Image (cartoon, rainbow, N blue to C red; front, top):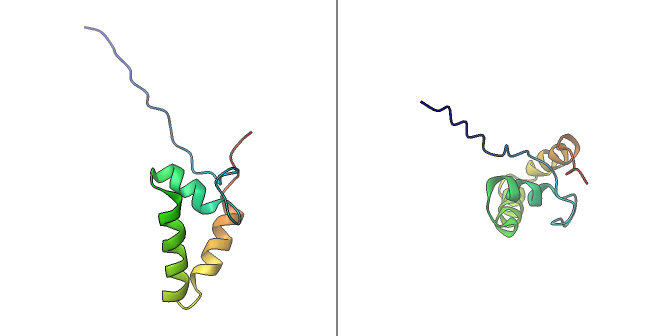
Length: 71
């Protein structure tokens, strides 16, 4: 019997340095989730209007709390 250990690469949630419009939050989340960043950006804009601006402090908190990707 052989012990085959498969360790997939661990995904880390980080802000993007390359795929960003403001702070890289949506680009980092898109990379983490494996979706297009445009979809998340459109969802964020919709969330701002539908939540009467409550999504703005959530985005700011995500920008402050999410570390930037390592160089």
